[in-house]
Image (cartoon, rainbow, N blue to C red):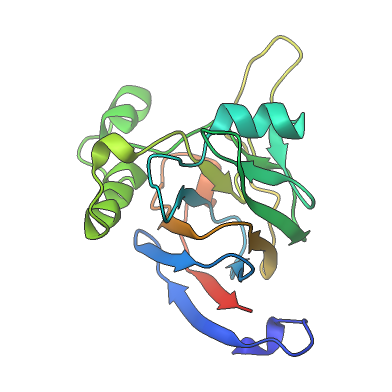
Length: 207
């Protein structure tokens, strides 16, 4: 399955398919790489990372927007921490326009927005996975939504729109420090974040 890594002399450390509505986490060491693959297209991946050696310094959406000068993430963009340290860099990206402002879905927000109760949500999925690493709900911060498209109009209106990702689209992240990565493969069925049909994604760690 590792044939999609087009890097000379690479070593695959993990190659995992994550089903919709499931978490994934791992410490990615400085200099290692993480590839996220949207296997079937139009599937949002809710993503947070933390300094593995000091989890209080974690991904910060505002710093990432300011220091990249753009609300969208794509090739060349950095993921910046609370203390303005570059955590990871996107070195390859076949999709682009990844969301930094929409945050994660929650059962409470789904009820307010869509009048549906007790839905599975990334808020709960991320919280459960954080607990594996000794963290908690208070450590869920405004996250990245890879492969989710949130257009912003001239007057500031936003929407979660149809994703631009196609089957097989991917991005590669290089760790600039030891980072703990936590993801939720989004279960959302009430907006287009997952094309109203959540599907699996693939996570490959290599060096």
